[in-house]
Length: 82
Image (cartoon, rainbow, N blue to C red; front, side, top):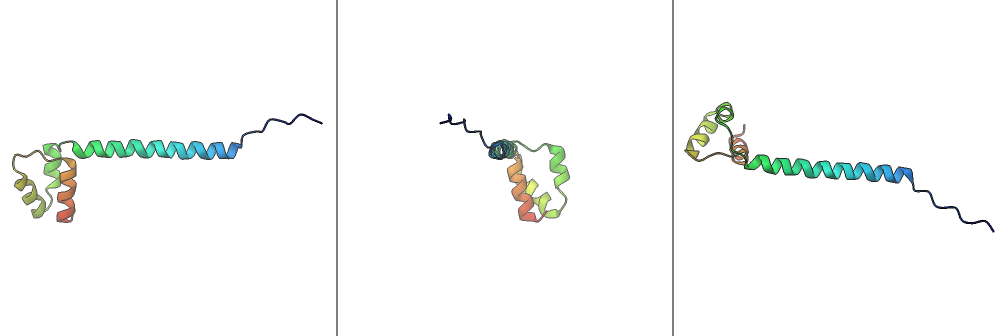
C-alpha cells in the first residue's frame, strides 16, 4: 500500500482569501480616515468656498465663533441642498 500524499492547498481559495482580507483591511482604513476627517475643524478658506448659497451663508453665520467640523459642514450642505 502506498503512503498517502500530503494534501495540496487550493491555490484559488488562498487567492480569494487574500483578496477578501485585503478589501477588509482597506475598508477599515478608509472608515477610520472618514471618522477622523469628520472631527477635524474646517479651515476658513474652505468655509468661504462652501458659502455658495444664501442658506449656507446663513448656516455658517449662525455657527458664530463656534469651530465648524467637517461633519457639521456636511450636515449644513445636506440641509441646504448643496
